Image (tube, rainbow, N blue to C red; front, side):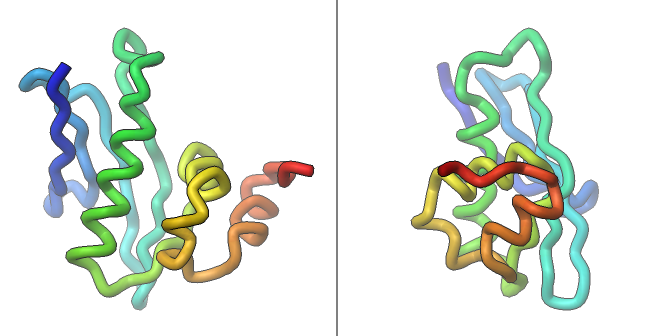
Length: 109
């Protein structure tokens, strides 16, 4: 299984490709120094292969390297990713608990 995550600036998204086929994407909206990650999806027939995690991980790596904006996670999957990966929380505009509250996600006890 060969995956590649590419930035598609025309569509304002990162796309994940599996063996040469686009199988998912993560959309963003840029606003005044902020990058709002608003939606993440993987084609249903490819779920259960950790592709969403790979997509978000590699998207955040690209954002770290090529963007100046701070991240505002809006997509619940991205919020959960930030919760479980504190090593990328420095990319956040606000503390993770604010994103949890906005998505109505209960923090882990």
